[in-house]
Length: 150
Image 1: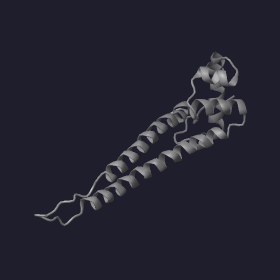
Image 2: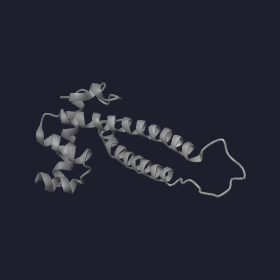
Image 3: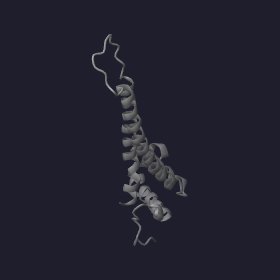
Image 4: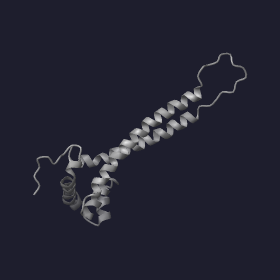
């Protein structure tokens, strides 16, 4: 995994966070829609309460989803921390716009008042180089290993 791929995980993480958050809401709505039946005479009784059982399963499911969300937020936070350590404000802004806010090259160019071509071909490579030089040890798989920087 190179530096660019390592940073691009934030976009995938946000998509997964959105999906899990939607699923939490949907699961809660499903469990709240379980209603008690009001019947006059019961012919057969059950030893379990379906509402209680549904709530317990929901809590277990919610805890599992919440744990996954915590893991995803930790990775996204790690990416943001690495970007925040880039010393050059212009390069840091470029990385934040591209990898944390998912701007297109054209949007970045407009925001930074620069040429999209210049940003995409020169500035981006320079910014990625700063990430690698300053934070190789923090990357899970070190893409800088054995690479000599001039």
